[in-house]
Length: 212
Image (cartoon, helix red, strand yellow):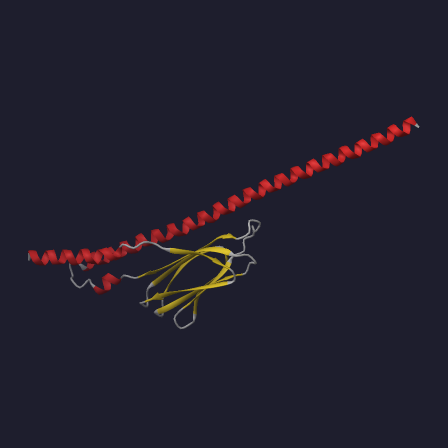
């Protein structure tokens, strides 16, 4: 019995270790169109997707031009889309297992930097290893805890990308405000110089007329 208990403990530890994963996304520059693929092994899994347009390649581009994202399943059928958005986050249930494609389209004339994250939620250990009735509830709770932790990391990654975008927007707005202030100051100085010149010419003419 003792040997069996230790064996169960070892199996439990080995089953818990793969649950600890790290959230990972990619950040890329898009010109017109960019596509990525992600394999989904099981039907019924939940696919989590998020993206944020971080910045444009020109500091003078301040409009809210978004990008299009189209998601297609392994058969090529469109399952989700997101149109003209600078950021979005959604999830859906996978109906067909296999390679899913995520295609971004940039409609603006500028290169855009996009932060993209995708994750498949699946309770694999509960399905494959939880045969013992004593361990089954524990495996189920571990799977739920793992998914909850990853959802937190997924949400944190999306919020960090949003923060990066806002910081860049604030920096660009500050730079634009400084340039505007410098331009207004230069215009004011030029107007003052012209005014002084015109007043001086006017006085010189009046002085010349009085002498005559």
